[in-house]
Length: 323
Ligand code: ADP
Image 1 (spheres, rainbow, N blue to C red):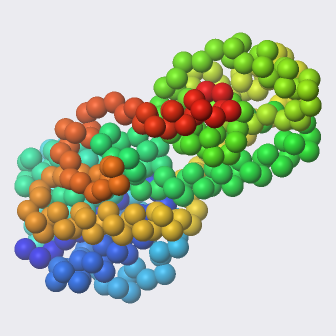
Image 2 (image 1 turned 90 degrees about the vertical axis):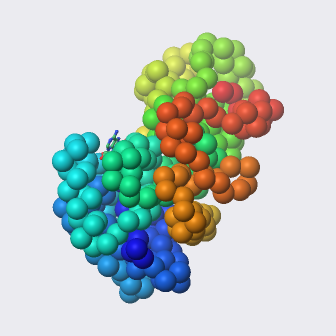
């Protein structure tokens, strides 16, 4: 069959729209008929699937989020709804899917493939960058740039007012966003879930710095640490002796115009995903590691715990970032 569909599942990221645009362009260039599935696996079940042409994806390359929507789907966990999804795809003659999502979405697709033999290529898409087997997930660069812009702005006000700012990033139990942001924004402190910390270790050093003229501190903390950001701010006030504020960046990290890197990675991921399907790959995740694209099996990505790469920790150790 020559019909192929794209679906976004789980959390949206910036970069999905460029991926959808290139999916349509590349599929057409390969003689395939592209389809768009709306609202994640819910759309598969509800037959919210439509044939696409260039005009359906024009004017979206610069937009965050996803034009075709994304969703979490309780129903897709049930056999009967996956059967409904299969019936819908059969009626449209679709036997290949490109799935933009996280490891949960890939687990769901792997199950669907086992039951119904619908081939899929998974494209890791999450700002948390916590999918095992790939150094890069779509959306990360845009999120990092939004955090950087925010931290640069916060630094201006922190220095003017002699304050400590505790800036909280997303990432669930992965500290990647906080760590890279702390490093590239010249922060003084970075707390992440992967590294145990004891705030009292920094007291003497920070107090000395304050006494010798430091005007402000920037602390980047990941949402998954054991202390709340407020507790860290309170520590700055009580133990270091500097007025402090908390800034929780929240969902602004997920949106915004995709950066050039995310647009290019979207194109490359999609092209690699479609090529895999055309070359007989049936249930692979498209990964990017050691500066190369490669196909990995679901067991290599979805059932293991992510660890932050050693090289990044080495950079931190050799810097002035306390982590
Ligand atoms: P993410 O892809 O961002 O990790 P989730 O873990 O929420 O997001 O998974 C997205 C969707 O994938 C779920 O809402 C569900 O529809 C589907 N899914 C996840 N795990 C399974 C599973 N074991 N069986 C069937 N579907 C699943």
